[in-house]
Length: 168
Image (tube, rainbow, N blue to C red):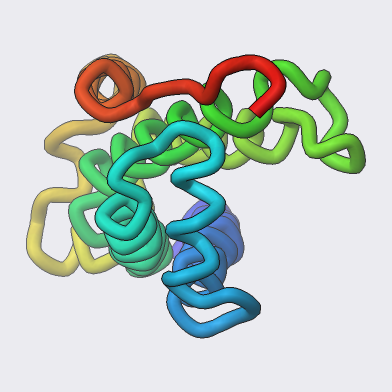
């Protein structure tokens, strides 16, 4: 194994488990799904419970898949989709910095996922074990992860996002 494979493993596991932890927290932390659902409703993601469950499940699935290097490019598309929705409904009007609830965190997670999709998951991945590690990387990985993730988020937002009226 080359040092780059170990670096990719470290990056995948760190970013993947970070996203998975956010999904886990939606299920089992603080307000749980009920609290997440209420918050989703308040920011315009309706029905809130359905979107809370989908977001939490998606974060866990995409996070664990990226961490394991399993179906890496679709997992990266999941990251992009989730982070694009989060950016649009919760962070876009709050500036860049995360300490102001801005969008820097969502941008970093989505970007790292796209970069991993482009360079591939490395030899220390389940994709490598099953022989698909290099099938969708490069420009194809970029198009699928970025384009697919953004397209999925745009469709989801068009179908379900109903922003609250100003002052609500």
